[in-house]
Length: 308
Image (tube, rainbow, N blue to C red):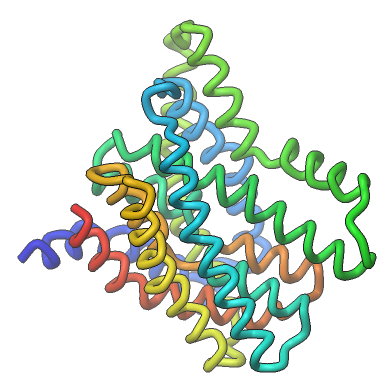
């Protein structure tokens, strides 16, 4: 019964994704329109939501090194496993790195934050933001460093400069950092500013979900077997490894449940953007995003029902 209740609560989220997908397939919503909607969410609506969340967080109360190490360890184990399987199949080193990244990086920003905050309560926002920070700061940097090192034959100071600039230009990172700094000062947001952020942030959830669906409509399915393996890694192996790491590091209760639920999210769309940027297996990544998002209707529901 609990599974059915959670499914009924998650269905509206996936219904909006489905609406976006149908709009894209029927060409009512073009690829250009999807790109601009995604940009609006990424730079404005989601940033406003994240700033508002983080400005009201008690960082000292939510931050935990055991939490960070548990998520980092569980994720890195699957990263290594997926990369090893790719190399065993005979793929190139760059492709193996991107398959590893695809197998562990979930759609935490666009899907995870709004959905888990609604299903698990507003207190889930802090742990989800920690997961997002590890994904963006650690694993996105790891991808850039390894790919750059493979192509250049070494990792130089320029590589770290590129990483720093990339993080500084990421609005999700910037909005969370600025929100935490504002909250740490102890100032309350002026009423007009708070209402502005609330109004703008409210657009993040429906627009982000619609943009996810519309972007999926333009994806073609190739290398189904590999994409299915990567989807299995993301939806099943990753949350299982994170759950095991929680046990090892003594993370339990509500925060452990939030971490595991965040790990169960489907492959993030920005992995495809990176694959296109570096010219490494974009169709394979695209298919994994499509398959994992479709399957996550049941898998994410099941995981949330278990952890809650």
